[in-house]
Length: 368
Image (cartoon, rainbow, N blue to C red; front, top):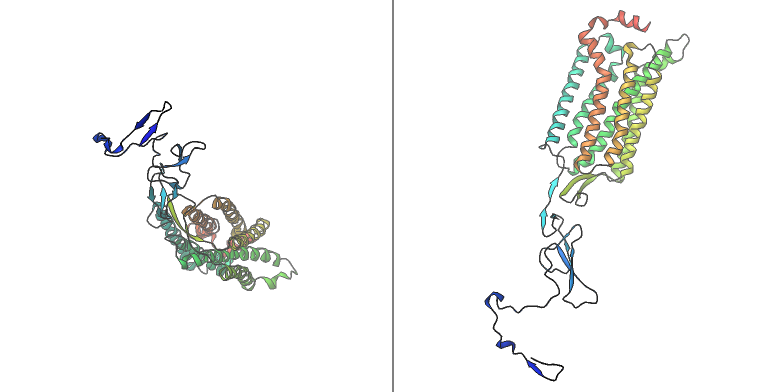
């Protein structure tokens, strides 16, 4: 290889005659403007500079480069995510609300505990089936309400564990229908209280409406509307199992996609509508001479119910993954336990600890 200088002299270099030192590892040095780009970065050629001059640009979020002097960063596969230095991919872990984690264990224990309490209360009412306090508060509606609350606590198990096609398909429909039965029972009990008071007035035409037929009609039609909403939801856009790899870098979230968000909020909206009507009727009837003040207890219980589900919506929308499920489970517990506590604890107190108040004479005196 020969090079001619400006003075006309010629410099000749014989590459084969050059002997490099051993630490060069027999590799010819390369003339570059800067050092190598390390893993986690990519090369970007400087404009107006020779091709060997470049900048080392950090990989953008979600991408990595595992080797030196890479021209571009690349995405990890769905099962992996970039590490902090963006120089290699780490395996993601699958995330769902399982029975084995502390949150799942606490929810399972709470569901069983509340279910046991509900069964005990139902047993108490069945044992005192013919006592005045049970008879006066429409015992058939009371039994229906207790069984529905038991199913509310048990439906929590549909939300726990790895989401499957069947559980995703039925859990929201079951939740919406069962809670509609619960709120419809409360509404029927409240309407019965109001009509019973109006029927005591002389010449009142309300007497023909007082009885189990009206209560059954309210329960049936209110629940039927919710059932139709759920059937339409399942028919048009049913929920399905979804794998979310975008919400959280480190996790593969296995969750139930509700299919139609509009239908999901229609179910919640209808529940809220029933709850507001029940609360309004109970609030207006709270000062009536009701036996054992059940209207007052219903007012408090429906206030708790409405508060819980009004706060549920913004909280649900602000969470992701298994914590969305946890928020819904907590709301189910809080609203169901509120109904149990306010409606049935006063009656159980009288039945078990103040039996002298559970007499027909006391009932007549209170109504008078």
